[in-house]
Image: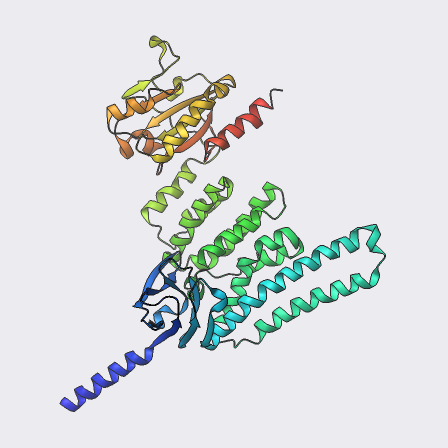
Length: 465
């Protein structure tokens, strides 16, 4: 019995030891400094291993199968050094992580391929962009267009560079992590160059983004998860097409992403939350609305409550819907209105347009945006635009001190998020703005004061000239 237990313990220990891999190395300028290895889980990072570089510059870090993907080494005041965690032992030699020119991978084949491609690919991309630039000169300028041989040489060199890059990737073993990671990294990093120099490659690049599977664990652990979302929609936004066409393309991309995401609730929530915020930050409200309705109508997955509330605001408060009336029950300051003519409800306001702003004195962004609104108020008022500030403050003194300088209507019932108005308008963050017409129909959900002022300039000031 004792022998059986001993054998079991030995096998267990051996199993643990064989399932862990090491990253060892020597960084001669970082003696006695801490060093750590971190990994990626989607949009987040997590610690894997920590150690201290000894007096000779040597260190050792451990990772396991659950960490397979991409990690990065960090030391005090140093730039990160990215490494492939593919189940192989890795050895690194150099002076310091910041001195990338001194870093050499002396062990770990996948990391050697990664290191080689990371050095060669940017040079090929620079050369290719240069040849594309010269090709345009030689084909579009009459002074050079007659030179047939240089044009052929340029086109031949372009093809050679592309073929050389493709050949490197094709030779990587299919089962290796880098055979997936390097093309994905190339795709994500290419968008700005394509938009500027090689627009003819944009359709195929967008198709490649749409083919990405956001439930793929290789992507989730790669550090490219966020970059893939951002690069994909940045390219759509900057592809040179009309805004209406861009929104249609974004809808197609959202549809493609959802095919796999609806099978994985965790990643669906993670991607939707980030993409929704990204679209709102870029004032792409039409795409944000499409995403919200797409996810809310998906019955096979559960959306976490905070995200569901955020998305629901787009279904209930989308453009064209009639916004609920607001009863100014509480403290109501209405500068410019006679005391016996102070509006008691939102519908009492007789203005062609009304901007309803939800905020609070405790909201840092509100302390920036509300004074900006006050600055533009006279211009907006001249164009028949009224402003109503619905405060989510809980303290009467704080509300009064914050709003006393504002020239527009300010209202507070001191119920914070439980305010009837906040609930009716599905407010989940501050500041939140809605532009309504005189029928309380929603015309716009401005994401900034600048966007609202731009609307006034474009539709009202210019339109009246």
